Length: 268
Image 1 (tube, rainbow, N blue to C red):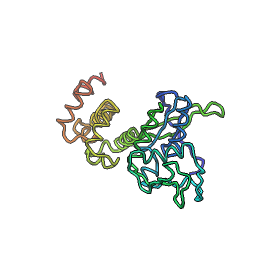
Image 2: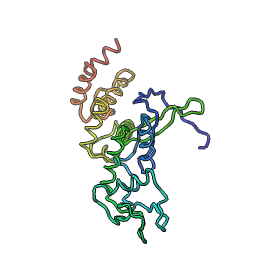
Image 3: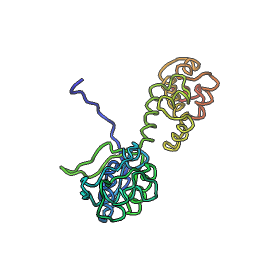
Image 4: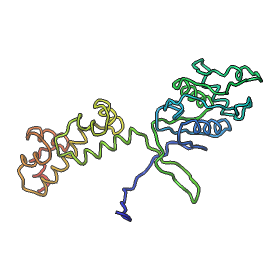
């Protein structure tokens, strides 16, 4: 298989926005980068594939903010490290509260400058901090490609996971539309609830899933009517319709003609 290539269809990608800085990933490091850029007056977008900030520190429930000191009473990490540690316990949901460090004392004894925090609270506080700094957030989205001008990156191509699920649905229907399809079976294939998939499909495409399936079946039927002498009943069965009556009704709704009239008109 090495060396094989696939030619993709040309596609027009809409420009969703222009930014000075785009940060991919909303973990602690990503939040720090986006916050720093925003505070320096740069129009900044933070893209996160999940639906919350903090990465492993929040979504991964690793709720220990490691020490910012050297173990001998000296703080060695400051700046945003210090700000985030204090932010994580600013609403009182803390464990291992470093009181000697928070109260400005100089004698810390054996106490380390570390805390335990509530992951959900910290994630929300990170989001509030970014929004207050003017940073734009985009959840449920991933960077899938970069656009370059020479050796410089001029843009990112992004894709939200809702669209990925719908494209997977379209691909599945394209491969199986002549078979007996059910909403439950399609939704199971893309790992979504039937009602949510049905609603999302129409929202993103402007037409229902069943409209898409029936249009593809009727398109095949048109080809058979034009290029073969098969009976209309046989064509309806080959194109996935359970009954001739239903086929006639759907065909006329989409084309404006009955199958018989369509064949006559095209062959005149």
